[in-house]
Amino acid sequence: MRYQFDFGALLPYWRDFLDGALTTLTMTAFAVVFGLAIGILCAIGRRSASPLLQRLCGFYVELIRNTPYIIQIFFIFFGLSSIGLRLPIFAAAVLTLVVNVGAYTAEIVRAGMDTIHPGQIEAAQALGLSQPQIYWDVILRPALERVYPALTGQFVLMMLASSITSQISAEELTAVANNVQSFSFRAFETYIVVAVLYLALAVLLKLAFYGFGQLIFPRRRRLGTPL
Amino acid sequence: MTSITRRSAFGLAAAGAALALGGRPAFADQLADIRKAGKLRVAVAMGVPLFAFVDANVKPTGSDVETAKLIAKDLGVDFELVEITNAARVPTIQTRKADILVANLAITPERKQAVDFTVPYATLNIVVAGPEQVAIKEYKDLVGKRIAVTRATVNDQMVTQQAKGAEIVRFEDDATLITAVVSGQADIVSTQTAVLSAMNEKRSGAKLVTKFVQQELNLGIALPKGETALKGWLDDWIKAKFASGELNAVFKKFHDRDLPTDLVQRTV
Image (cartoon, rainbow over all chains, first blue to last red; front, side, top):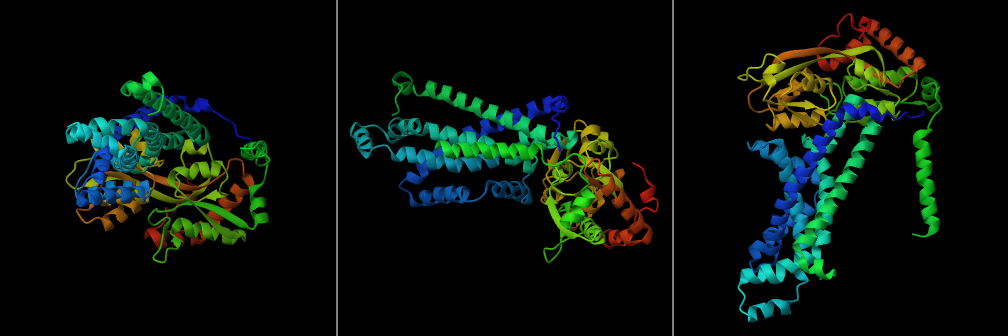
């Protein structure tokens, strides 16, 4: 059987593809911001002196990192509505992404914090810096600079994993692909187009993260060397 | 990577591409192929109440599954169930991942361009349903409301085209759609009556009632385009089994209703 490619059949659906790609990007943006916040808080929690906080954050991280994302999605989406909380689909999808990426971010940030030499923290204490000052200037900022590549890599992975939210009817790029192929019957072409779009989104995301990194880490920008 | 492994990886990719593009000669007779292989690969979308589901012993059953088994038996070959999702129904036949498809697929002009259909072997009614107190009489009443459908179904298509302005949420299969309604993520649905009764069975709150009937759909067995011998055999088989009452018996066993008497004369 020879396959006749017909990409023209997909032209009427270009708006759907665009909407889907934008939804994927928006979901990713929300998930990056909130996921990073949760990750940092959780990393601090795991390093704190309180055993309760340590265990709580540890439990969350282990639970999320050792269960499949699709199970987490169904659990959150159907679980929430079973107890009467009916979120808009988009919010529910972003929530599952945040919960998921937060756990991975926490471990990456924690690894970065662990690389800060205790001597530096002791030096900061000797200089009379307050605890928040120490956390912000001596631990968090250098730590984030060190793990920045790993962190952004994780966010790109998360953008790709957001395709799974099509299962709970989020109208992102993969869901659009499934719709388009079911109306146009050009499955092969549809998934080629969507694969190229995901590739473009990933490259775009990487460039954006690179630019952002240059902006917020002046030391790296000026010296061009890793910390 | 050494140059040898790189070369073999490239060779593998080339072989894969050749396989994908030049798989089989253009005028193969699938009916003869099936007989030669000694087995019939039937694609069925599982998780559809009454049509295709797993029973208490986790064995696939339902009117589609039993009909498919009957076909294999009368062809004198083994039966192989190919479980697929709803959205994969047409592509599965286009790419010949299965010989035929018995998956409550409605015969539509759009689908006819992609695959061939037999004469109708069954019917289903698709309806819009919702809670008693919600006033819905036609498509335009759905505007501004959240309505749940299963992706790549005729319901999906009809609601998408006729209820512009409604928030349409699409789930991959009927099983997920049912879970969404049972858990309360959605309470207005467009689906077939069999699925609706399964929802109401599992739902703890108020039952969903039928708001309006969208259409009665004629279901056909789908097969790759141009397989005239296979299509002829299947058409004759459906007509014979319908006349003998066997087809109706299988259907009635699960659906508790008779097939329309003019079923096989219907042209879609």
